[in-house]
Image (cartoon, rainbow, N blue to C red):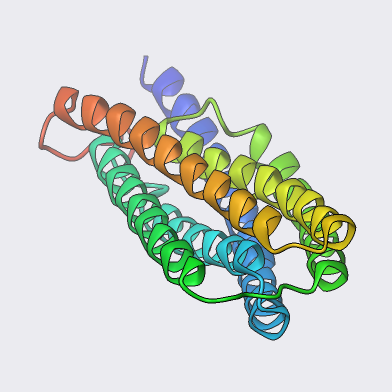
Length: 214
C-alpha cells in the first residue's frame, strides 16, 4: 500500500516538474512579446497592438502566479486562478477605457506595422498554446493559463486582420473594432475562469494537501 502511494507521489512530482518547465518557457516568450508589441503599438498608434501587448503582460503575470502555486494544494491553485480571472477583468476594463479615449481623437494606426508585429507574436503564441495544450486538463490552474494563451492566438489573428483592413479601407475603424473584440474576449475569459475557480475553491478544504511519503 505504502509502495503504491509512494509511486503515485513520484508520478505527481514528475508531472509538477513538467508543468514548471512549460510555464518557465511560456513566461519567457510572453515577456519578450509584451515588450515588442507594446513598443510597436505605441510607435504605430495601434490600439489593437497595445491591447495584444496588454494581454501578454496579463499572461506573464498569470504564468508567474501559476509557477508559484504549481506544487501547492488544489485550493491554492483555485485561488491563483481567481486572481488570474481578476487580472483578465482589469485589463478588459482598461482596454475599454483606452478605446473610448481613442474615439475622442483621430488615431491613425499603421496597418503594415500592425500586421508584421502581430504575425511575429502569433508564432510565439502558437508555440505557447502547443506547449500548454498537454496540461490544460490537469487542473483549474493550468486550464486558466491555457485559456490565456488561446486568447493570445485569437488576438494576434484579429490584429493581422485589422492591419489589412486599415490599409485597404484607409480607416482607423477596423483597429477600434478589433480592439473591442479583444476586450470582449477578455471579459468572457475572465467570467469563465472566475466561475470555475470559485467553484473549485469552495469545494476544497482549507488544510493543505499532504503527501503520503516522507
